[in-house]
Each structure stands twice: as C-alpha cells, then as structure tokens.
Image (cartoon, helix red, strand yellow):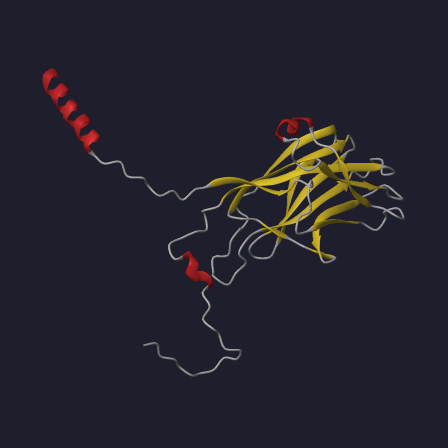
Length: 242
C-alpha cells in the first residue's frame, strides 16, 4: 500500500512539472502616487479660507524650506530644495472655528482627481500641540463631499497620518457618463471650543495616496470615450453604416 502511494505521488509530481507555466492576468496594480510634495510648482496652487471670526489679515498661507526627519534619506542633493506648506491663523474668539486648505487653479477651487481605486491617503503634518481636529475632504462619484477624520492635532512636530478610504464611498460611476474619479477637495482644521485660538500654525508635506490603478480598466476600455461625432441637436433621422 505504501508503495502505491509513493508511485501515485510521483506521478502527480511529474504531471505538475509537465504543465506549462502560464502567466495569469492580474486585476491589481497597487501604486503609491504623490499628489504634491510642495518642492516644485504643480499644475495647481494652494489656497486657504476660514470661518467668520478669523482675525483681520489671517489666515496666512506660505511655503517654507523644511522636511520631516524621516524623509531626509529619500531627498537627494540633486533634488530641488525641500519645501513644506504652512498656514498661520488667529481668531477673535474661541468657539467652533475652522479653516480649510485646498488646491486652486485660476483663482478658483480645484479638485485633484484620484487615479484608480484609492485605499488610503497619507501625508505628513506638523502639530503645535493644540486640541484641534484634522479632517480630509473628498468628493465621490455621485458628487457628494465626504469628511474623513484624520485625528487630533495634540502633538508637537511632524507626524505621518494615514487615512483609510471607506468602501462605502463610490469612487467611480457605474455608468459611462458619470464622474470618472473621486477627487481630493482639501484639508479642514477645526478648533476645540475651549482651546486657545490666538496664535496657531500648521505645516503639511508629502501628500500621497495608495491605489489600485487597474481596478477600472476592462476589456474594451478605450471605447468608453470614442468620438461618435454627436450632432449639436437631437434629430429623429436614422443612419446606416455599411
């Protein structure tokens, strides 16, 4: 009986080596894409807006030379000077104050499109140890803006923050004519009602996201945006293709 088992096992092993190795297509291509490292000019700029009790002349948005210590080994001497995005603000009174940092283009708010299906967004943020809350704003494929909690800012110095994108957020329209991608709207910082508001600063660096870039690619994908030469007005005429 043992001999039979050995022979059968050897036969199965031999057949396994005879089967040709065929590469199977993958529906996953996980990539990390940098939205902005603030070192060089992008196709968009950055703007800031605030709630009504902000002090006159604030908030102020400006870039500064700097980099989190953990990113120094990845910054080459040949690279442009490492820069970070900073905001300083003051309010005339405590309460539910907030300000938003968002991309803009041509003096208008600009939403950055994500590529593929995003699983998480991560970035570096410099905290001043204030009891403020940080939120991430994204717009889904149905046009709704979602607020993703990014944690409390009660820490000093740089911290890498990772925000998971919930599965219930629709990132792609199920129909051809819908929104192509989920978009990044901006950051929102909210003050605690009892926290000091007379002198606050925050910095951001290395904004990026992890995504499956093949999740929306399918057989015949290129035909999705084919040009039919649509008429300007709809008519009832039929057309024959020979």
